[in-house]
Length: 162
Image 1 (cartoon, rainbow, N blue to C red):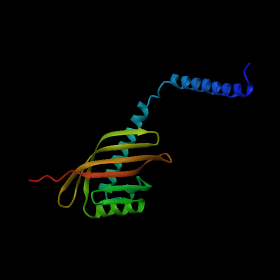
Image 2 (cartoon, rainbow, N blue to C red; image 1 turned 60 degrees about the vertical axis):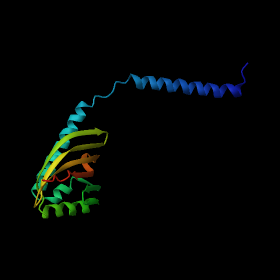
Image 3 (cartoon, rainbow, N blue to C red; image 1 turned 120 degrees about the horizontal axis):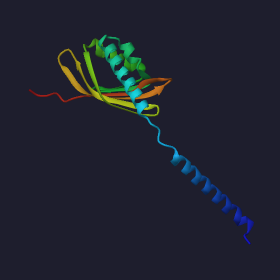
Image 4 (cartoon, one colour; image 1 turned 30 degrees about the horizontal axis):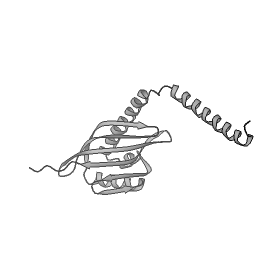
């Protein structure tokens, strides 16, 4: 005969093992979610964000461009980083008043997982004395139903020597 003090812990362990196996089998039977529709919708959202960002920057509307950024976002550029909405707004205004214009952006790839996503591609912008070409990456987060930029990095391509 089995001692009850030894039998109860073994029964509990067996019960937990059986429950865990049943849960694992039920999860395994659930087919993976088709995210094609979600990815297409995300791609469209990023295209709209890129197009509107460029349109507003080229129109000189730093405030409308800054509205795409989350309140605690970071903007990283060749000359340093700025954090937070007010600093990003000031940096965008500085770029616009400094003569940056005719931004062109070509998105190359977007990806999303849950409430986070990214967009990467190439850009060129005309400055007072030259055209700068480079690459960018945007990290976005779904905040209150809107995709907001939480991190934006742009890297200019090395200047080509004549």
